[in-house]
Figure 1 (cartoon, helix red, strand yellow):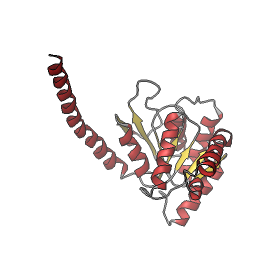
Figure 2: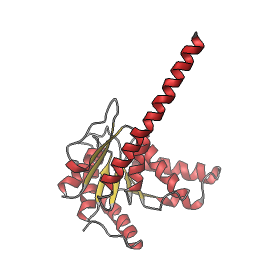
Figure 3: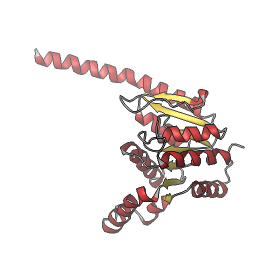
Figure 4: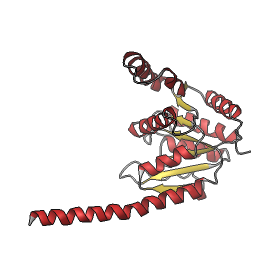
Length: 229
């Protein structure tokens, strides 16, 4: 009896998995159709828990506004905290402000600074991450938690393994990132040789909005790409 019940439950799981494929396909199609129209953009990542009075919220807002002033669009995860600051700066600067939201049981909700026609909602993290990578020509990574680190190392891995073209990954906040970069250099590279010498050069650590723009402009100039002017 238990075996029959177990087989029935397993068959239901397999059926649900099969139907989930169509939902996943739908998220990819919707994302591709909408984001293919936005032009060159920079993704900004960081903690959803960062408050509006925090120095990194204010710095993110300045960075995003300067990014759109230079003709680039801004993509964020669409939620509160650093994401809200990124969309707010883009909105105040009159530039493209994209939000890729994810359905979560806490923390995540749409912020009010996303362009109305450039807001997408996702159920699947992996689909959302594909959109970030496919439609961004640069990553600006502010201080954050596990989700931010996941997005950061996903991008590094894809570039390191030549699965995507190289683009700048800019870590903002030396006081936050230097410990991690030091561990990567001394442990992953020097002690264990688990990465190559050039892999660490994929990361730029800065403190100001001007440094962010300098790196992005150099990248665009080197590869003869044009922003959204």
